[in-house]
Length: 247
Image 1: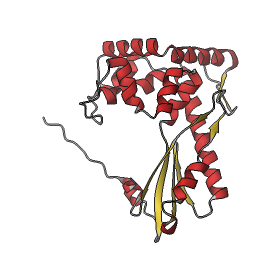
Image 2: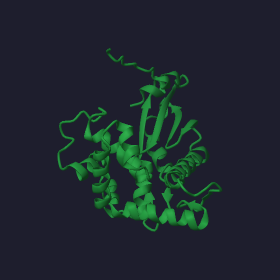
Image 3: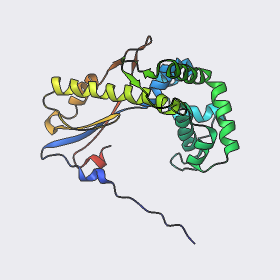
């Protein structure tokens, strides 16, 4: 029996700009992964992010060797690039080898070896996980760089992945919302439409294009208050047709 490939519609094309306007999507690039690197104090990852390198390629080469992604279709679920992207995310958030292997339908033994190498190359990530586990057990809460806390009243056992994920996810949400408020207060010609975790959708007059995007980026440059401050880069895509055609 031949499996059917189902192509889902791009529902973002339903969102179109008003007449005379351009719709834009401003995205915090690699936001959650950067917060994890700064939380853990992983200087190797921090340097990679600051260099502007493609972080998933960098991570794949860290585990599998230089040039491993050069001839791959990085969008394919069979590629090392795709697998590394999935597995690093799950591993950083406390998932075991069985869980990340199931995410890509790969052998558990391969996922175990991946995690062994990942933690060897990035011991700071493991140390961060252990620190958060201790804080969770001692205080029943975790906190993010902005000082917000998340309390847990359930049994502590099994909560670590949720607690680890909350820290970068909440940090990114606060960061994008601070940027949203900056745009609302300081750029009246920008009409905010939607917030989607680490991105904002907005529209602005065509007469303001493209110079207004420079000011938009400035307003979205939010300092996350780590001892080594983090400012997540912003990538903006635009279209005069629809959100789904922003490029």
